[in-house]
Structure formats: structure tokens, C-alpha cells
Image (cartoon, rainbow, N blue to C red; front, top):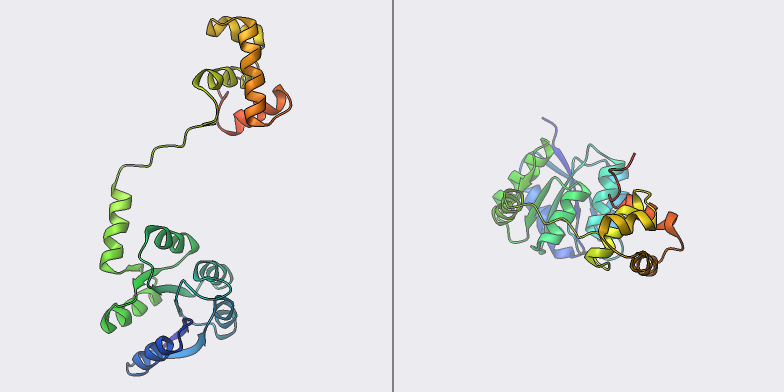
Length: 217
């Protein structure tokens, strides 16, 4: 079998040397390049065409997230395995959205690193034990609450905006909500100011883009 071609991207020379030595001591691997920055990682992936890029997230210039996205976009056949100190959810899910196929924390054992490289090269997704538990917890937990539409508006102003988005005139809005025409005019003026729009048409467009007024034909 042909060896797995690996590019190592990390801004610490000692860490790159350690990974290079680890892979050199095992059969079935060939280190085809090293990179000390995200830009070098992207350029190396394009020129060397590795099977796997081992990617640190914190690097000078282009960070590992953006580098991963560019590599996956330009070379879909190349698998990115993140190997980083960052264990927070933001970094983890940002890497996944960028297209990383695996995510390990630095400190992972040599056997785990080697097996992970082999797995992502086969097209599998790999996560270290602690990372995998957080991924499972995220997807098995309740869905996040939807963001409130136009939180700067009061509940009454959102009701007025909903009817405005349906194309209703002030007189109709006043009748449907049991308000005086003057009160409706005041609400409409407040809506214009808070949404920073100039007229009813612009307010209606903003409201419809946010999902309001969909019941109208």
C-alpha cells in the first residue's frame, strides 16, 4: 500500500519535529511538508497534495480555522486533522464547520495520533474522547432557543410590525389590536426609529426577511 502523505502545520518547531519523528518511526507514513503558519499550510497543501494535514489552530497570519476552510475548499480529497491545545466548544465547532475531519487535543498519545491519521485518511471522522463526549452532549441536548425577533421592539410594537408587514393600514391595525389610530401612529414611528428605516415599505421588508407577515398573500 502507498504511504499516507502527511503535512504537519504547527508554529512550534519542536512539536513539528516530534510529529515528524513519530511518523518516521512507523510504517505507512510519509511527511511531505511542514508549515509554520496557516498561509504556509494552505500553500503546502496545494503544492504537495497530502492525504492528511495535521493542523494547529493558533498560528501566525492565517489561523488554523481559516486555513482548514481554504484547504478543504481547494483540495477536497485532503483530510484535515486538528491537533491543538484549544478544548473550548467555539474552537471545536468552528473547526468542524470549516471542514476538519478530526479533532484531537495536544497531549493525545502517540497511538491515538497515529490511528487518527489513518482513520481520517480513510474518510472517517475522529474526535478525542473528551471532545467526542462534548459533541455527543451538544447534539443530544435540547435545541437552542430561537433568537427573539427584533429584541429592541416591545411586544406591542412587534404586533404592529407583524400587521404592517401583512400590508395593513393604520386604521385596520388600530381596529384589530383595539388601539386608537394615534397610538398606532406612535408605535409605527417608534418602529421606524428602532429599525432605522425611513418608511413602511422598508419596515415591511425588514419584517418579512425576519419571518413576519408570512400569512399574507
